[in-house]
Image (cartoon, rainbow, N blue to C red; front, side, top):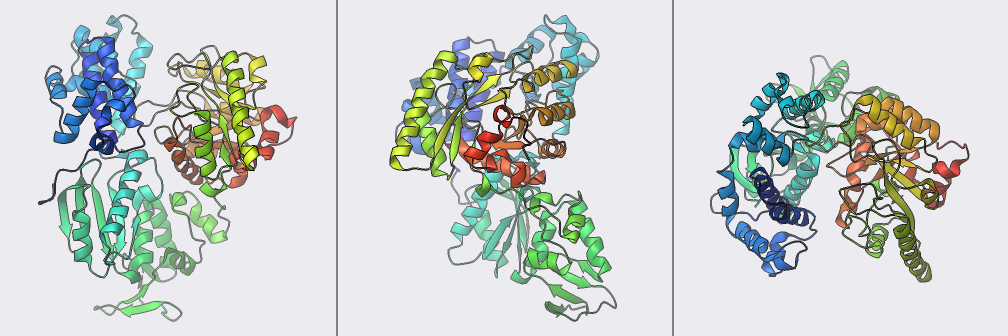
Length: 611
C-alpha cells in the first residue's frame, strides 16, 4: 500500500467473494445445507447490490438486506472494518490448499470437490488430472468415462486461462474508476486527457494489465496523482514517464504520460494488436516513414514537405508529430479504424478501400427482448424494470421471465403468464395515459428440456408476443445430442430467439459442444434470431461466433438479460461484442422500432426475409 494512505474499502464483489468462498468451504466440510445457503445467499445478495455495501453498513442497514440475518450482518461488518473474516480463516485451515484450488476448475463444484477429497484423497488439480487420465475417477458412484473427459477438458480450459488475465466485466469498471479518479484528482489540469488502451480498449473478453495513456505537461505530477489513488496498493515499477502499480482489487495497472503532440501515434500504438500494428508499420514504411512511439520518423531520403508538425531530433532525423488518431490514419490514406476492429483481420484492407462498416452503436438499440422481473428470479417488479428501461431511452422492453422446467429458479406457468399479462397491460395503460412513448411486451425465456421439448406448450407460447428459448441444464451432453436438442427448439414455430447459445460462463464454464454452424444454418432457415447475451459473465455469442452467425444469414439480437435495474447497463458489453463482429444496425433485430421488430419476428414473418 502507498505510504500514508489508509486501507482501501472493500468492494461489493470482494465482500461477496469472501462469503461465497466461505459457503464453498462449508460445503466441502459437509456442513448442513441450511448453513451453506446462508453464506451463498448472502454472497448473491451482496454481489447484486446496486449500492455500495460500505454505505449500507455506515447507515446501519446491513440487517435490512434480503437473506442477511443478524449473524451474517455482523460478519459483513467485521470484514468491512478489518479486511478479514476470522470465521473464514478457521474453515480454510481445515481444508488442504490444493482442495480449495480444485474449485477453480470449471464445472467442478464444492460437492464434487468434497467427494474427490474424501473418497479418493485427491488434493490438487494436478492429482485430479492424473486420476482422470488414468481412469480412476470411475470408482466414484455416478462418475464415468464421460465425466473424466469433461473434467480433463475443464482442466485444459483452466490451464489456458492465464492467471494474469482478468474478465472484462471486472477489468473495465476498474479501469474506468482509475480514469475517473485521475481526472478528479487533477483539478488543476495536471492531466489534460487520458484514455484506456490495450486489449481493453479493443473490448476483448479478458485483459492482462490495465493500460492507461495520458497527456500532461508535468509527467511527474501526473504519475504522483495516479499513485495516490485509493485503488492503488503499491508501486511495482516507476520510470520518468510511466508507472506500474498493483491494485487492491484487480490486475496491475500502468499509466504512461506523453506530450500532447505525441498523442495520436502513442494512442494508436498503445491500442492496436500486434498484427494490426505490423500492418500499419508496413504501410507507413512504404510511404518512407517509421511508426514510432512519439511520432513518425522519416526514413533516409524521405520527402518531408506537406502539412504536419515537423521536427528535427538531436540526431538530425526528421519527425512528424500527429496529435490525433484520425489524423494518423488519414495520413496513411486509411479510414479511421474503430478500436474493436484492430485485430489484423482484414480491417486495414477495408480501411484502404474505405469500405469499413458503420458499426452498431449503443444509441441505436431501441429496446431489449430478454429480461427478468420478480415473476421469476429478477430483483425488480415489472413496473420498476419498465421505468428503468424507459429512462434509458428505450422504446420497448420485453418481460421474459423463466418458464417452468428450469429447476434452479421459480418459473412462470400458463396461469402465471395470464396474471402477468394483466400487470403488463396496466403498466402500458399508465404510460399511454401519460403520453409516454414506451411499451412493454410479454414473452418468456422458455427452458429447452433434455429431449428438446419446451417448458411450456405451444398454445401458451402462441399467446405471447415473443419467445426466447434457452438451454440451462444438460450442457455437458455430447455434440450430436445437444445440437439435435437445440435444433428441435429452433424449429418450433413460436421460438423467436435462441438465447445464449453456447451456455458458457467466462472462466467458469466452458461452452457446450453444440455444432454452431449447423445451428446457425437452421436459425437462418427458420428466421430464428440468435442472441449476443451482453452479461460480461457470458458474452454469448462471442464476437467470433456472432460474425459467423451473421455471415450465415442469421439476424442477431443484443440483450442484457437483466435480472435487476442496474444490469440494464450491461448492454454496452454486448454492443461492443457486436462491433468486434463487424455488425451494423441492419444486422441487429432490436435496433429496429418496435412495430418493425414485431413484424419481423419468426411467428409474424410469413416467409419474409429478416434482412
